[in-house]
Length: 301
Image 1 (tube, rainbow, N blue to C red):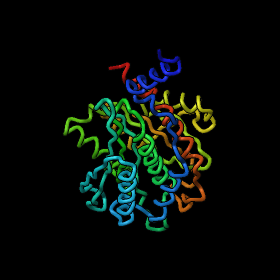
Image 2: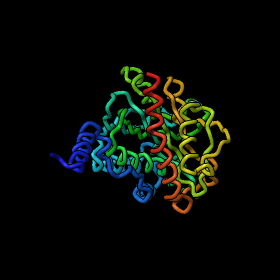
Image 3: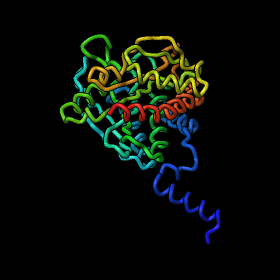
Image 4: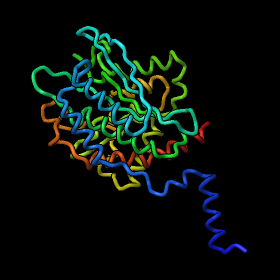
């Protein structure tokens, strides 16, 4: 006769076999110390405008970190036509297979704005969100994901000359959308969460009117649940960013961005004006929102 303890033990083993997610004994944790080191390393490469040697170094750093994390990635290069002539740009696309082939993407841009009159290292504007997505890659690699996870690192988000003239902006996300439309793979992308400028020490993120409403609601509900109402404000704003190309193509998208940042596009966007704490807040919110996003997508199939 088996003891009660043995029966319970057998049941727990059976449950773990039938439900691999139950074997994840430790909760998934966004490590802002690790993410801040990614931010610091990018800043150390110096200004990183599209086509620069420093951006090439940044790209190799991203690829090396993804490889170490066990996340498969590839480069997608093309010659972007810009107001100052063609520039070789490269997106990085990383994939973590899930139970479904349909995808949820987390995206960032990893280039910095080109300035010729001062040294711009983009600690928040470029490095912070890239660090955030790198850390999400590490965390989500160890999760039982319902949907396949795509990590997108866009080149050429910044205008080379003037954002408002001749489509001089969001080169990388436009290239991704156009390529996916041609390949017939865009329909498999069910949601996109864009991170941009998430390092501000005084983190204040507002709801973007260009983002998809239900996706924004889920993210802000997670922020409220975790006690981050002071950082994720209920106020509305309107942001033009990489996510707009996806929204126009029919992909539900949300932009998590802090544009209330006095150091934006100035020499002051440096390590003194960013913090690991802000990275932690955004990372916590995104990880809390992911299961809710998965549920919403599954319920609408």
